[in-house]
Each structure stands twice: as C-alpha cells, then as structure tokens.
Image (cartoon, rainbow, N blue to C red; front, side):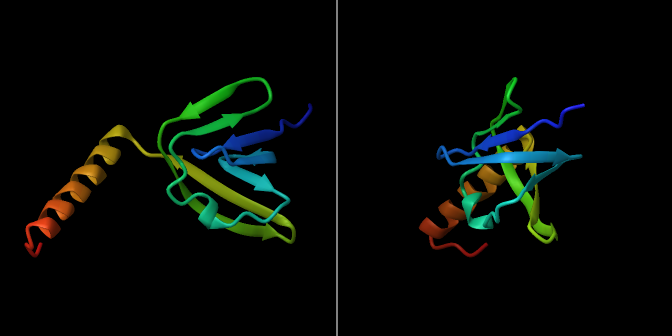
Length: 103
C-alpha cells in the first residue's frame, strides 16, 4: 500500500508540503516554526493529492521533533461554539477596555 503525501495550505496561502500522516500527527522532514500558524489557521486546506478538505477554524496543538529530522505537529478543529465563545470574550474585554472598566 502506497503512503499518501499531504499538503496543508494555511489562511495566508503558506503551503506545508511533503507531509506524512500518523494518526492525527502530520510529519515533516523540514523544521516548522510555530509562528507560521499564529493567526493563520482560518481557513486550513488539507490535501491528500486526491481530495481537499477545508477546515474553517483550526489551531496548532503542538510541534515536536519526535525523531532527529522528523517534526510532528497536530492541528485541531475549533468548534463553532468555541469560536463564538472566544469572540464574545474578546468583545467583552474590548468594550471594558474602551469604557475604562476593570474586569
């Protein structure tokens, strides 16, 4: 059985390619810096060479060098409920700041 090669396209068009998949861990032979994912995971397109899957909101869970020269990273979907709650908390904090109110 031939192993699939994956490509991830982040929100700003950055592509991370030649990835293998083990469970929910993507594996890269090139070092990937966490900063690539900051504010850049909406949307995320994951391609296996046959089909593309678009995830509207994701976040990086972790990146580790599992073995020398192998960088494993995990992305997770952010649910609509979690996204809405985070946005509401951010809106409240902004209004409090603009009103000079301590929360």
